[in-house]
Length: 247
Image (cartoon, rainbow, N blue to C red; front, side, top):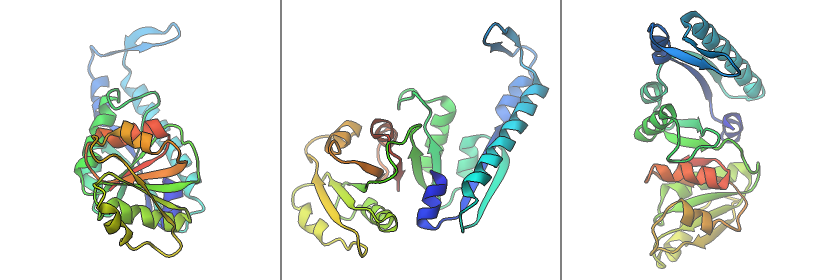
């Protein structure tokens, strides 16, 4: 997904493999044990084996990254860093960047792992945009959807840029009062982008369920929305099986 977006928007791409120092710290403690499945039972966590496993995983991640970006014309690089995912995101992300995070299989907004929750929190606290990718993606083509809370919502401009690059229609789901329709019609669209408007009930709370209901007859490939309730984008990605870009 990261390579596809980089190709679509002509973006540079940075792949990161984060070696969690806390894992190595745990492995050095003599009373820490691990449970080996399939009859392995409990045993002391092996520091050397864990270090080796992380090295192997980093090399496999780099090979996968190199394969995914080999046809991209933009600058692509891969780095291995030590620390935590949350600290890494906080330290390197800048305005104009897009931080891509994959949601875990079989997870919900209440059931993410602590590590992913920390990474999500760090991403939403930084000035970069955040792209949440579900474990399974429903489709590779379709309309680009902007969830707008007002007529000048930044999600509209971001979604229209993606729609123009992807040569897809733009659908704006507006959640504001009826007088917003006239103001929305004044928003300038890139050449070639067809705009369609869907009105959501402005008197109902805006949550993942109401947005999913508004999109029930839409086959979108990407949802764009602005920051708000941090749990909503993750839930939309899970419910709609499409990436959600938070700007």
